[in-house]
Image 1 (cartoon, helix red, strand yellow):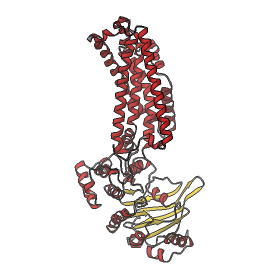
Image 2 (cartoon, one colour; image 1 turned 30 degrees about the vertical axis):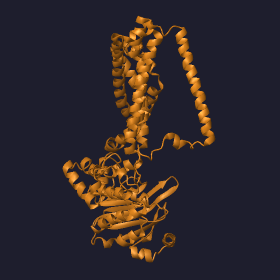
Image 3 (cartoon, one colour; image 1 turned 180 degrees about the vertical axis):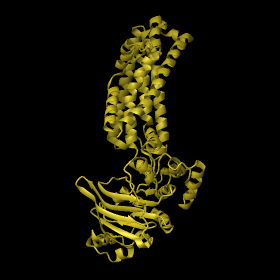
Length: 281
Length: 261
């Protein structure tokens, strides 16, 4: 990172003075003590309720356990990536409809976007699981999960893309029009590529939401990681330990996705954000 | 306006050739504000017309109506005898024939310098890529930024960016070029490198409409100076005549106010 980039904290707040710094130190110490006490209390409760007993943990030393969890994880990835890919495409389509100069088209897409943004994905999953089959449309559990998740995500992504499009300076469009490009071409070649770069971090964060949405797979009995974890729990009667391990895996995955978004944001940020600076390097 | 007849047009071309740009009775409002008030103006082939006037006088708006980046309420604008289409393919085709250089350069931020210049020829004129790149390099050499061809716009100075923007317009082989305050966003030491390119263009016979505050440029290069105030063309004359003997009170006031600097 170059030296001219300042952190959000530096940009928004004054540098702390001596008094504030002392207060920060005291606050940090108190918070740390509280945190340690909390963790200790939890561990203590675990201990006295026998959660550390070997029977709850030793099946994690077996390969078959991990094999089963990882095959669930693969299912999670499959649904998340499929839903994410569909949501990206639909998001762009919805956004283009939303910014249409045709009032009717833009109103329709606004309603569509607001609907999918507002409706909980679980409700849509129930709809795909219970209502649609009643009309004779057969669908695998994979699609009963992937489609509703992608639809709710696409509503959000449409607004993310729209924000990106609005962030591209009007001059870019004017310059492209002035060399004779059609409106459609201006959107494809000039506006969208820049808009996407602006919103890459938000897009990746939305992928975290998609990954978390897949955890309701049990509704349609799709074998994702959480569903497989529930099977393990039944087999070994080990609820706390299994959920504990699975939670950590989810956290690690989403942490990795977030790190990726930060990395991408930095990489593209240096290239795009400093557009009219005289001497950015 | 009685004194709107083109006086200095003779400087460019004898005979009654069709003007490259012809505006008649053009009106435009922004709500209550009458930004363009019965504008009649024609620009002959090879003519360099400089638009000056106080800020808010409508000169930028006038410039932008010529390729319909601003719409007009009434009146007519013709480019090389063809009325400016309102939309679609025809409008795009006509825009392709009129180059435009903006105050804020507006280079495509996600494209290299070379791609900025080849974009129009490749996407609009369907020139083969190799040929477009060859022509683009030639143009970049002409404006003196060929070494920067593979950089992105943000890596260039303002003056360099504006010269690339001029090359980008030239790549379309325009019939005329519009310059909307091309040096207003530049640091003082970069203004001349852009003006030099513009002077060269003028000497090569390019038809130009230039909105600017660079009075020396106007005096040196313009065939005709058009002075605007409050959305109207108040006065137009050859540069020496205009700067030395302004007829209207408003032009005198304006010239005095900028002389103070």
